[in-house]
Image 1 (cartoon, rainbow, N blue to C red):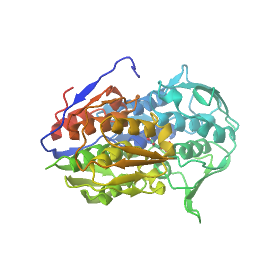
Image 2: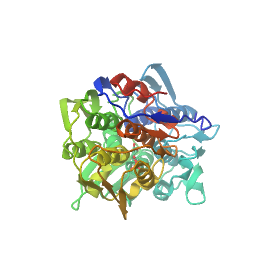
Image 3: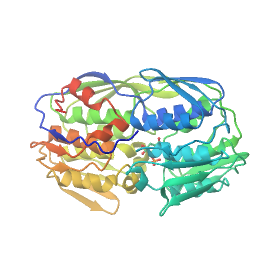
Image 4: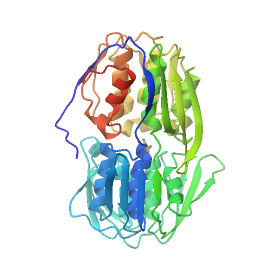
Length: 447
Ligand code: S3P
């Protein structure tokens, strides 16, 4: 459970020594949520290895338990789930607390829409500010009813329906969470559920549904994007799932190693789904010495090992169409841009305003308060690189946002006067062993 009363500030000093070593990052957050949810909806038993045991995923585990499934931890990252079967979840006795996790809240809303009982969902101070209309509008077409706070915010009451109508919907924003929530409602609706996305977003839901035996049709749209459909009601068969390392978590180490002179880091077993690896392309465009080795497919997802060496970084112009494949990586890439030589432009970042914090504003504040010039033009961020001379000395507010906190900590390692970070507790939502792993590489974080 979220304990928002405990705050852990951190002072980070300029690091004069390289990062070196070989490591594994924890399991992919998106895949971990889906593994627990789909296993709960399956008939029979599922066995999951490599599950991320960060707080966000644990909120999903607790919710599936409250809905009658039986997720059980066997060992570190290893879970056994006894599923309930599609349409067979049971009314929760208490409010479902999704903590800091937008993925839990949005995907679960889809599942609950096509179950005929009442649920009440809430979250922490960050999640209660985030928009839910993006799911409640399309999900209302199933016949389910949603009562939210003013502005479509949590807490929210969901009156699901056992006779859900299938939804046809074109996404107004590129969001895998919205796409997934509609597809999940469709698993227990009678007929064809169809989602069109104008730009392709992460397809872990589609991949994993297939893995559980569901027929999912995907077509390329003539003007770009995809049309995804499935015919309900379906049956999911319990399965074994191997969760790869999270590419979003790996990017923090990659950027740190790319900037800190003499560094050489290898991260093994990282997910390489092409709809997630936009940041790796951008690092290569910036001139980083990044190699992808030992590529293979495991559990239906491509994985590989990443090898990075420090080197000069140059500015880059990233088109808006690239954003969905690296949407969570802008905070840490903004540090690479600030360190690079030249002026970087990140285009089309409107979705950053509705993440765990308003990341658009948080990034601007983080960089400006540490001596980096940043301009804003509409939804574009323009970062004036310092050619390795970030002055630092600023205090960074992280607004209950794990990725902001990790990015700020890495900014401190490369800023001459270091930085102060107001609160690093939220890192536990996605990367519980972040500080021990960074320190094993030589980061010298003093906690
Ligand atoms: C996620 C999708 C993305 C991403 C989030 C995880 C998912 O959100 O930012 O961290 O697992 O589907 P949006 O769908 O809001 O873009």
